[in-house]
Length: 169
Image (tube, rainbow, N blue to C red; front, side):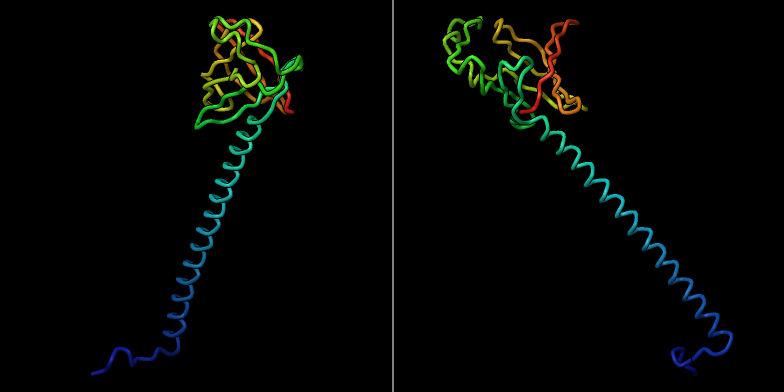
């Protein structure tokens, strides 16, 4: 009886076997390279996506000079919401919230008051929040978004709205 491991291929059979093994190994090599390239593309896409999301969020957060330059508002993230508080007033930090409809709040200083509250990210905008206007004491629905290096801030009631352009400090 001949042991199957003791048979040594030679001639045409050896060449044919080598060719089959070579082709099989080349196929595996090609598949591994294709998988590696696909994985590189996936990783690059994920990194770019994370960078763009992080870049967007970071560019909205920070200090903004309001339209007209009367004040500065610092927008900050709290959980998944954005808020914004007054951090500087052109007329000085002693100004009071005299137009607030709540009599108890009319004696508070405006510096430190949250005028933007509860904004949630939706696509390219932050929406669903409120903006308080200390000049008239009214609160409006609000959305904000970036346009170039500027921040668009829109307060609205029903179909009526006003949009301001704030600049990054």
